[in-house]
Length: 147
Ligand code: DHK
Image (tube, rainbow, N blue to C red; front, top):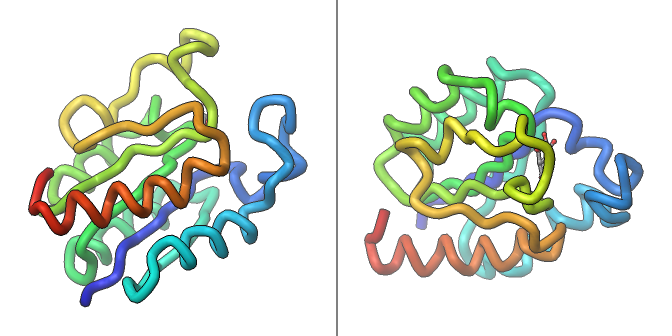
């Protein structure tokens, strides 16, 4: 069984302390534990970076090694065509994940490059508690070969 990749973008290393009124008080380490529990026997590559280059390198790794991707690109969602181009090469389900409901926030958070042609589905606004739900949803998409 190939791993799923749970990739997190810039500033999410500060989760729990960063704008708790928007992102809550759960830490990224707690989110990782929830994802591993939700994945059961499925191996999980759980990562975070503030670097666009590294995030793209991990997508390339997932192209060769993974069965599915959950990605919270954070601010790169709205800026990176390079990340979109990398995700478009992935032959499997991709869940674009946002802790907050970006569509209910400032206009700079409304136009997602990832959603344009790469994301199979988008989950937004469920808080950090949405991550383990995304793991379950990704497993369903993998099993149904739907992307
Ligand atoms: C996280 C960020 O860092 C913001 O740039 C996004 C996203 C929203 C989130 O809700 O997880 O706009």
